[in-house]
Amino acid sequence: MKNSFSQLFYIKRCKTDSHQKTNIYLRITVNGKRSELSIQRKVKTRYSIQNLIK
View 1 (tube, rainbow, N blue to C red):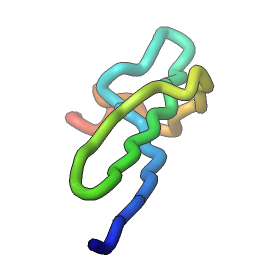
View 2: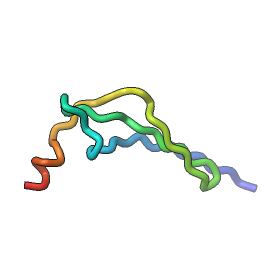
View 3: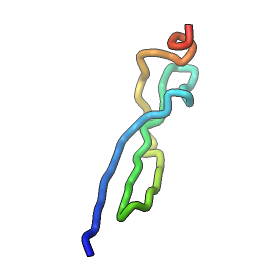
């Protein structure tokens, strides 16, 4: 049986705070089963959702 492992770091722009910062999330996939968690770090986003909609 072959095992697989992958990791993906991503942000959710829809959850931006008042300082235009959003959390960084980590998705770990092992043999097709996913788990997601916040790594408790924030990054400043360049664009807000309101600016993208206009």
